[in-house]
Length: 291
Image 1 (tube, helix red, strand yellow):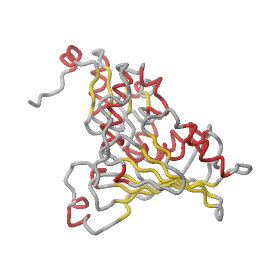
Image 2 (cartoon, helix red, strand yellow):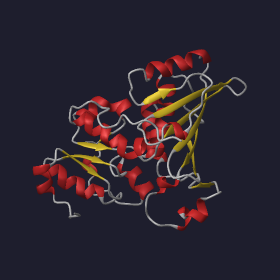
Image 3 (tube, rainbow, N blue to C red):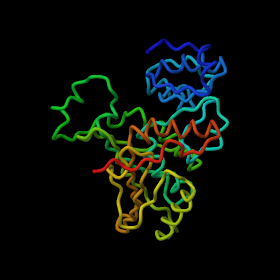
Image 4 (cartoon, one colour):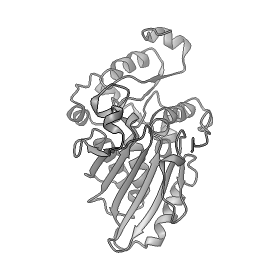
């Protein structure tokens, strides 16, 4: 049965409400739910960005609830588990940002790489474009094809910059490119960063392993192993493969997630678990759907 959401009724029946509505719509619904005393996990982009002007510039929508931007907690459990647990409003991260932020956050946090000239190259299955019918996601357009889109203007760019800037302790501007793969789900991100002066490349893996040691859903792969989307299909895992290129003095991080699970619903469930005082992994320990 599909019914129009009623904040008062939901307040009687729900501890947490998941919002899976378009950006521009979620902000209005969330405000009513919060006013009724319901905690909210929003899967749209309406509360991910801290700055109202940045949101309006990238999404071309006037934000009607700017006071809630400072209240919202960015829902990446590896970074904000404590804040999520006590939050009334959680902004579930985007799929591309999840893969990109987890790939570079430790490197910037520990000062292992320079914050300038970061390049993030991401490739997604067609479900990343949503369910809305469009010519670009028709089978005959996608099958046996591989193309770039929204170069230099993808809306997830400021979200990635926001969180990596917090990691680095300074404002970051980066290059973010996106591509559409002929598969239905999964994201493979390759991130490039210059290794900082004085950093021993051999220490980089140890820092990543230490940062994610107690993080249930991030797997730092053994040396020589690179991430593949099939290994995380249908799961909440993010796999990270690390490569140090001594010729260019770059750190290369390959990140793989399932955009529908880790990049959306699975991450939302993990956030709900934290908000409700349950084990973060509750309902989520799935093996990858392969072959």
